[in-house]
Length: 177
Length: 251
Image 1 (tube, each protein chain N blue to C red):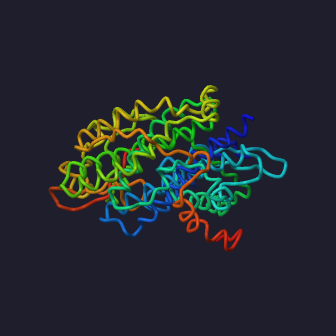
Image 2 (image 1 turned 90 degrees about the horizontal axis):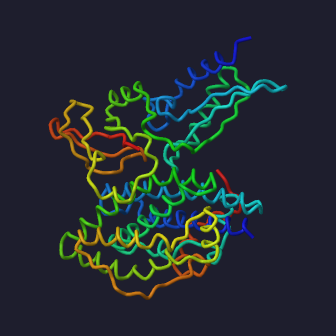
Image 3 (image 1 turned 120 degrees about the horizontal axis):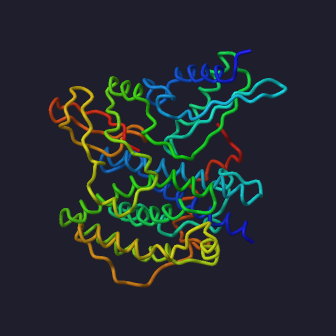
């Protein structure tokens, strides 16, 4: 009998292979979507509970992610999976792993330029001030910090469009959230 | 009855997000620029996600077996309790933007207050939504300045939109018994307490945008009580068509 901790760690390892459906180069663990893995004893067989959190409220990938998790665990012989969605604390890009940031960058998406620092609530008086929010993202192609935003929104809720003023390439920026 | 008041209040929050999301979706594929098309539809997506969270909770609290879909697709316009502002037609881009800006400021202030709700689930939903809404407000306030302080044509259109939509802003701060009751209990926020902060933000942005804050005090009201104009009925006819024509259809 493998102890519970070891079993949970094995599940974390499997989930680290489940790609994000929108940005398949990183996994749902890299993204910080998986919050907890818990095993619950049950007379009918142990239940593996996976706690996930949505990135943006309306992100259509959330449902696909749930199905991918169930599939990945069933393939490895976990019969009983329970998914739990939790919205608090709210997802933040601070939960991106360093591995995830590296993979994003290699893929051509600039990772968030700063930390959200657990700030859940933004004071309205701060919204009009130009702050570190607008710090330029380093170009994932040539590394230059000489970049500018083109559009606050991109192809998915988590991205914005920027362009490099040195190599002239446009690139996706993973917004700080 | 407290439970009734709570579900009524939650439904208002959900209806605002849902109706504005539907309005913004009407721009999909028709935005004046590619970036604007993406911005409007991404904002609509955030709002539909927020609407689902509020309406699911409203249905649970109500306890009549109605889920988010039943509430969204099976109610008639007199049962919708959104603010009149959000059902106003898109009009030209100035109308869409000014409507968004007025709402975003109110939304940000409301959610900020709700993050301190005595009800944990309300506080959790608000804490999630406010991060998205802060982003909406950053964008809408920026664009109000760019177009207000833009060309003579863009400024004229923005001021026309401000003058036309102003009468729908009073309702946002007019508390009714439900809001007074829940506000006193710390569960919701009494909207009358937000008016000064809202006006201060609007004045600040309008000053930069060279737009004039109207001095008219006459305001429309009734949206929160289910008294809507003709526009909401037309919006719902399109949004609800499938579930009305083919009840329980799913894919």
